[in-house]
Length: 208
View 1 (cartoon, one colour):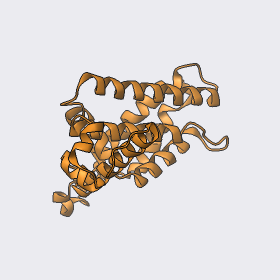
View 2: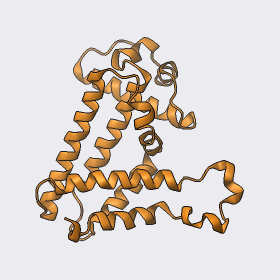
View 3: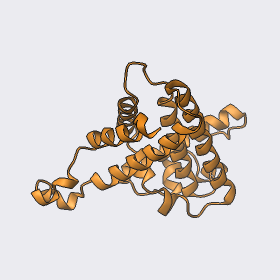
């Protein structure tokens, strides 16, 4: 495959690599695959991957960054008739369903994805996330008539609640025969229901 030279070609190649990485990650049972496996899935030479990403961690940090930007973009324009917590819950659940790599990748951010990276890559990720969070927060502040900066703070807490709930409510396959045991009822709640419960409290006007 020819090397991409024009900016739009490079952007398209980078997106193709991220899409291949997402497929590999899911197919690999949510374990980070090697750069060689990503290259094979994308049908490019291994060296091509390293033209865009310095390490395999950089590939998947880039993928997570894309997920976060896309998710935040979907929530910026809530309906005037739908409560904000319901809008956010529906948006999150739809995104998780459409992008199965998102939550397992999010769960690996601190322990895996932010390791073995150069400072430039990490700074770029943090800057991209901060900018997207600020932009989406600004849009929601305007829509909900909230003081400047309120929604970005609420979004930060919403993401933390979402990730924490998702991790705690995952049930290990090794305990499949124990899933209905009454001792574990508190851990067998529905993710969507608990997410809405949490979002309703984070986005309550009394907490603005």
